[in-house]
Image (cartoon, rainbow, N blue to C red; front, side, top):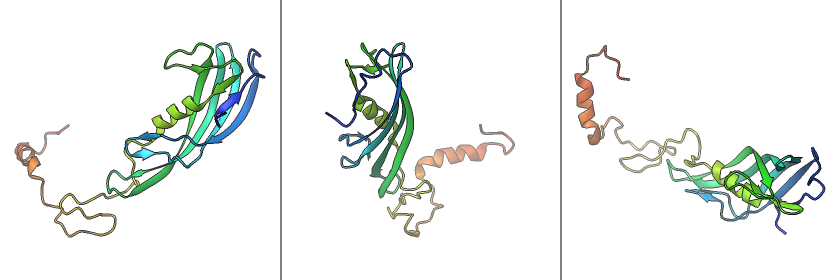
Length: 174
């Protein structure tokens, strides 16, 4: 029996029956790009389970730690995702719209897995103001100034600079 399997026999076919659950467990393989939930870390789930006309409604919060490589400076990045969900469990689940309701239990693992993967950062940063690496020498700008001249223009933009120089100063560019 997994950490996200919940017995709901007391709620099934009882209109407006409701119960709150706290679940915690590990789920390996939660990774999107460079961001992942470490396999040895626990995910915390708070669920309010309520019988509704169509099945069992699960709503609540999920919280999980994440770690990654910063996409600007390549240093370690980490944080925590905390978010809300609201999903339906049905006897005959609709593909992509609801989850499977068993005879007297629900397995919340597919819901937790899917929701966490959607919330992991696609562009993880070590800090919001990370300066990244110098494109010239590769130095970490968060550690120290590298001495490279920031005014050196990228030659790939030279054609655009010529175009902008020809524009009258009173013409808006947007």
